[in-house]
Each structure stands twice: as structure tokens, then as C-alpha cells.
Amino acid sequence: MDLPNYFIIDTQPEARLSPGMITEACRQLKRNRAQYLRDIPTAQTITLLAQLADNWRDDLFPFRKMALEAGQEATGFSSASLARGLDEFFARITEENLHNLITQELGDPRRLDAPLATPEERADNRTAFARGPELIGHITAGNLPCPTLMSLIYGLLVGSAQFVKCAENAGFVPQLFAHSVYHTHPKLGACIELARWPGGDHPLEEALFNEADCVVAVGRDETLEAIRSRLPNGKRFLGHGHRVSFGYIHKDFLSRAMARELAKNAARDVAAWNQLGCLSPHVFYVERDGAVRPEQFAEMLSEAINELEQSEPRGEITDAEAGEIAHRRSCYEIREAHTGDVRQWMSEDSTAWTVVYEEESRFSTSCMNRFIHVKAVANLDETLHAAEMARGQVSTVGLAAPKSEAEAMVIQLAHWGVTRVCPIGQMQNPPLGWRHDGRPSLGDLVMWMDWEL
Image (cartoon, rainbow, N blue to C red):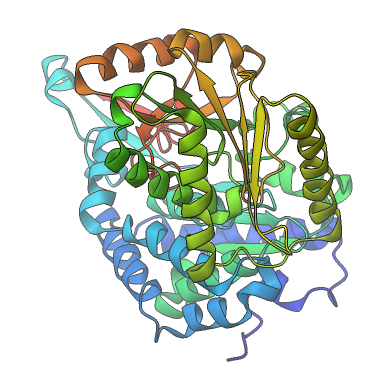
């Protein structure tokens, strides 16, 4: 299947981009939005997106077939990993979930089509209308495709034209998704543009920033600050910076049967998207004094990851990434031989996966690509003290705890700054309505008009 040249990214690297080309593309997007997208009823957009998501879970859908056939070379993920990730992502995109998302964020999906009042607003004799930006400019990161797909879906829901600047070597799946939108509904597809260029290419980005009403960026904190400093006055900016995640297992969940099941769920969290996302765990903290000791849980986790590797291999990584894993392994081998407070399990003859157990509880960042730490702790207080260096940057905590204690632990985590707590096994699979970085997904995009009657 050959892709037609609907988007700038289709003609790259042959296309020689210029600021003028970016400016004209943005202005055409805004014209297309005014002509095609702005007045499409939200319910119609929801139905279209839900049907498209169903197609993306069908192995016969041409764009999915292309993603899985060429995905390993284009993305680095194995076909099995990519298939599971896409299935889990698109399973969330249903009509019911999309309606619930808009209702959660805006009160009623119809508020995107015309002024409408909540009961509270009716008491004040007024209505309100939510309006998406005319043009959203997306600056995407290069690690995972799903955040970019989600951003595109959010933009379509609020009726915005969108220009997506893809990271180098990271636009393959978003490009296919954009084509699938165009194939399903050409008028919606005409309100999307994708291109790629090296990060920090100021003339091209300044052309985009000048035309966009709202800029959404994902990347390192320094990258976000650089973008923020270059935006013209009056432009809205939504930035999602560096985040890490970890898991926590209460001793009451460490019977042998429960621990083995938890190890399988934890292995899925480690393997999902090769641990490259901000929702992926770097560490699993395991309480002492359970029926299964933390060190035993680490061994169970290694067995579960090894088993998962057979059905869902990690895929190829760069020489630099493999070198970093080998270096870390050698450091832990030395510690294991001399201190006795470290154990390590690893794949044979490859860097496919690594599990490191440590008695020392200080938070450790993983080098990712299925390299996971397991650490022993007494309680959640010790864990948060050990993870203090990551405070303010923790996105998700995967939690296994008894109901009698879970709520108090969740409140403690919230006050410490965590923005999402979920079951272990679901860390990379958030519900559609989750609030990224603790902020409303659609609510941050729209502007409101109040109509006082």
C-alpha cells in the first residue's frame, strides 16, 4: 500500500521546508477548518472517531497492516508490542467513552456546538459555549506514538485544525493515523497537517508559533522552557515535560499466588512500549515482612518478563542503548559480588531484559528498554522519602494494597504530588478520561463564551 501525498510528511525528506511553506500550510488549515470542521456536529465527530478506532483494531484494516508490517523498522517496536499497544489504545476510543470524556470536562458534549446551560448556570440565567482553538500546533516527542494520536483526537473533538511537528524518525504511526482519518472523512483529514524537522529549527517553528492559537508540546523540561520563551504574546502554551513512574506493593498482597500474579502484571507494565513512556515504571517498591520476600518477588518478575519476551519480544535498540544496559549490568555484577545486597537477573546472550534487586531503597531511574529495579521498603513513608529526588516529576504509581489501606495511601500520594494511581498492570493503559499531569485534557484547550440571558 502506497500512501498518497496528502501531508507534508509524505513528501519528506525530499521536500525542502521553508518558513513560508509552514505559514501557508497553517493558513490553509484554518481555511479548511472554517469550511469543513467548525460546523460538524460533535456527535458526528465522535461516531467517526469511534468507528475509526474499531478499524484500527481489525487486522485487515490497511493502515494497521502497514503499521505492523513496517513498524519494527520504522519505530523500533516489535510487531507484537506494537499490536498490543495499538489494541489497548484504540480500545479506549468508543462512542460512550468519548461522550463521557467531553461530559467530564465540559458538562455536556453539545456545549461544543451551541450555548447550553448546566443547572447551576440556569440558576444564574446564563448559558455557555465552549470553543476550541482555530489552530493547534503540536510539538511531539519521539518515544511513543499514542500521545500524538491522543492529541490529534482531542483536537478533532474540540473542532480545531492541527499542525503536528513530528520528532525525527517518530512520525510513522501518526502519519498512518492521519491518512486513515483522511481516508474515512477527507474533510476532517484536510484539517490536519504533519511534517518533521530537527528540534530547535527556529525559523520553521517560529512560523508555526506565529500562526497557531495554542501550542501543545511534549518533551524535556528544558525543551519546554525554550519553546515557552519563544512564543509570541497571547499564545496559549500547554507543556508536558519529563515524568517518571513507579510501582508499590503492600505486604498483604505477597502471598505466593498473589505475588506471582502481580509479577505477571508488573511484567506487562515493564514491557509495554518497551518502558519508554512517562507512565512506565522505573522501580517496584515491595514491602518487607510479607509471605514472599521482596527479593523473591524480583525473581518472580524476572521469570514473568522472560516469559513475556518469548511472545512479545522487545525489538531492536540502538548500539548506545545496548551499551548503556551492558554498562549498568556490569556495575551491578560488581556490587553483587562484593556487597551482597544486590541480585541481578538478565536475558541470556542479549540485552532484552534485566531485573535488579536492591536492599537500598533510594529511587533509581531505569535506562528503560525493559530494565527494571525492585527495592525493599518498610512502608510508604520510607518509599516517598527514598523517592524525594523525583518529587514533582512522578506521573503514575501502580498500587497493590488492601482496600482498608488503599484510600489513605492514595491521599498521601496525592499530597506528595502524584497525579495518577492505578492497578499494577495498567500503568501504560490509562482510561480515556485521565487527566494528564493532573490537568483537564479538553478543558485546557477550549475557551468559553458566557451568554447572559
